[in-house]
Length: 420
Image 1 (cartoon, helix red, strand yellow):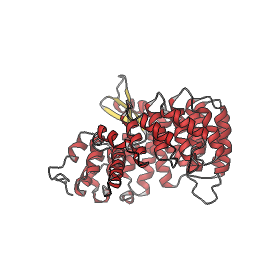
Image 2 (cartoon, one colour; image 1 turned 45 degrees about the vertical axis):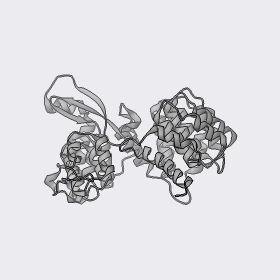
Image 3 (cartoon, rainbow, N blue to C red; image 1 turned 90 degrees about the horizontal axis):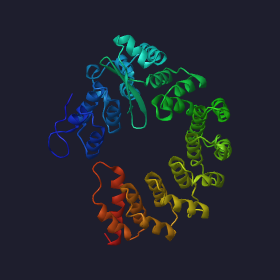
Image 4 (cartoon, helix red, strand yellow; image 1 turned 60 degrees about the vertical axis):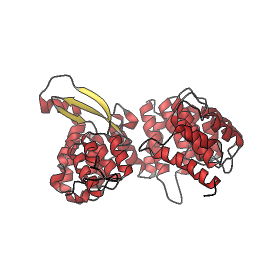
């Protein structure tokens, strides 16, 4: 298998050293700038052997051909289960090489994942190492969207994503875990919603798109435990989100449920999930349920309001109340909220001059991403103020697709303005 000794710059490939260093950001930059296919394929095998699941997944996204690997280039499936990294395990089961693993091997992997999950990482580590020392724990990013907790004891390091691995294997084998079992796996996680096991459980249930799952999730709304309400809200949101049928049977019930829920929910995490769900409906009732929370003390809630109003805009203009809320959120104390509101306004069809002036007002914001969102919105409107602001921002940061997109829009505007 090739090792890929050159890249687009004509020099020695730096992709392999970046993988060796475990530098996910640099790997992403190099992939974006281009690396030859042999280098990407070799880097994928290296990432798997290093147990760098996040990087392996990233390489697959950028075209790594896992089918070019030999079994000895990778690691055994059992080793991937033992690592506790769902991202690593799923990389080994990429569609190009999934057929290498017979059902009997998947069943053994399922049993191993179940043992880790039911025993607990700390207890299993102590059994394997015999160590009575303190266990070191830290939260780490396992994939682009999901985190896990990493445990180290007696020279062994293991992540606690076995519940997600178990759920994934069951799905591959056609084994249908019950709602209660999947919920219990999710709720067992300390980090809750962004943990890989929580995500895998809620995504699997959301993908079922059936009345029984809807009813089970809906019943959780009245639970005194906010974790259960949060899980129920997420599953209900995903059931509607994943329903791409013409009937869209969950749209009406979801809107009815979430509008009432938003008015009574007191837990911030649950309320945020409910508002995100409302933002996925294009309906005046959803907007009416979102707007009262535009001044909520928690920034997560305010961000959900801003992003939800984007989906609810009725071309060509926002309602008066939505416009007022967005203008306030563009000046929010929290930079993430300001950026979200600016982004919504930037891509909206509403060309009211008050929005252009509001974006111009944040061109000198202390946060670069807020400035970029404003520059982007002004460029889309053909507002000359974007040109000098873009010049002051300078070139896009290396590897940032978001920055490139924003600044490319300014350059496109300049070409149109100058007749090119």
